[in-house]
Length: 441
Ligand code: ATP
Ligand code: MG
Picture (tube, rainbow, N blue to C red):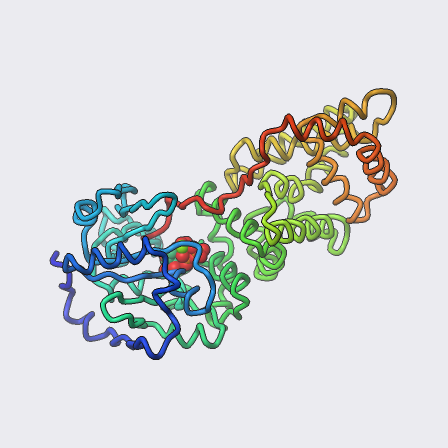
């Protein structure tokens, strides 16, 4: 298939783009990373089309600093590879190039057409799910496979214009999240788009357009078909993006949260306004505040907060059945975590973190003899103490205990500092800077 060829009937149906010239928008090359500019110019000088796409164009138009820069081109992956010695091709189904400049990676993808073909056995389109979107195309194929109109704007390095096929510019100005095309169809093709609509609405402070919003509740269950590893990646973006609390509230509002954390949803539904709600909201709020202050956060802590109440209720059942508190906690931790990873595949280091924090809660109540000294030097002590504070904030009867441990740390400053020195630098375990390998590019 030649690059720009497409069936004539499609070409007729497709609207022409609106070209927003340099004078009519605020994107300045001064705000585009040097590496991204290098990539754009080299492609362009070699005779290829080269555009900045996706989140970077959206963020630049909003006067925000883009997290990263993605480039789209009509050059094929092998041609990109040849042009950039500092590049490597990644992905099996969708091959794209990563061009590296020091720590910065520019992701360069070839225009692709969303290829939905129910009769194509090789494509195996199950109930409209996109299986193949690895067919190369042109810019006006590429635009229609993108999720939100605000994510479907292209910045052309040739004349510094913004190319808008989908009314994305109007939506940016109006603060509106709108799915490209028919929302129901697009959700069926890829249910994760429902989470993305909510995530971007929250992050940008945008309102979700009526037609984009309406199907969410009804189609939320489609998330059950998404591989658990991909759902976990999305959860990280939802809860470590600096807007965890709002994301949580919006996800619940649209009936999406229960698809991600069914056990948590079950207790929230029965105890609305009670402990679990407050504990989780405090935890998410703290997470957002820490991120705003550039402090490290760990997914393990959020997982501990998300699953605390389901775990505690189960542990209480086990105690009622005659288990010791210690065994009940262990067992309940096992069960709750293994049920959860069926939905969101969380790496073991995170679930282990959560379970350590849980297991330390009863230990924090044993204050006789030298026990506190031993506990205070435990590598997870700080997290366990922070979690105790959280329980206090949520109304659990641990205020005295929190005060006891706070005083203890002041009185044993030397001991506490000795632990700090021994511990390696407490780096963020978030995925802030990691490139995500899986996106339908
Ligand atoms: P962020 O600031 O979070 O990186 P982004 O818009 O760049 O935001 P990415 O996940 O990096 O989001 O994806 C890059 C682009 O790829 C998006 O802007 C969108 O155009 C397209 N895209 C990503 N995921 C999907 C999807 N599930 N369906 C359709 N298009 C998608
Ligand atoms: Mg991006």
